[in-house]
Image (tube, rainbow, N blue to C red; front, top):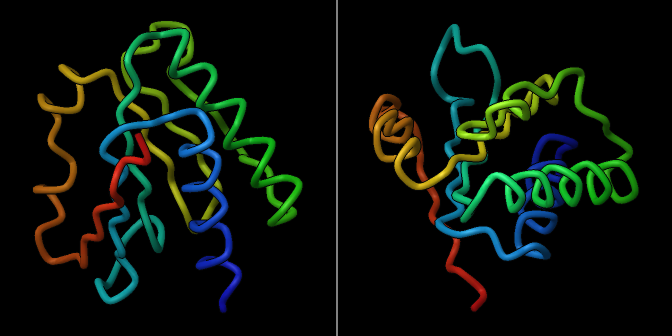
Length: 119
């Protein structure tokens, strides 16, 4: 398993631990000239839920993949939070914001994997 695959797995685990919804992995690795190798996208219920998701992803990725984000943006408004792990960018949205930006469809060439909600 590559370090990117391990990181994606641990990011998903961190999201699942705090009950994220509609987790989607967008594999960008076959596409040339992308800013990263993968997006991991999820939906949270509220700004406080997004904060809990960020905290959980940071903790699990640090402990189990020895990785820290180089930047975390969007916590102030908490409509869309992005976490930059270099090869992986995490996007956490409130439902309306996710629907508006529809990132998965912007990358139609990518391989998209949807993760079933645990609850």
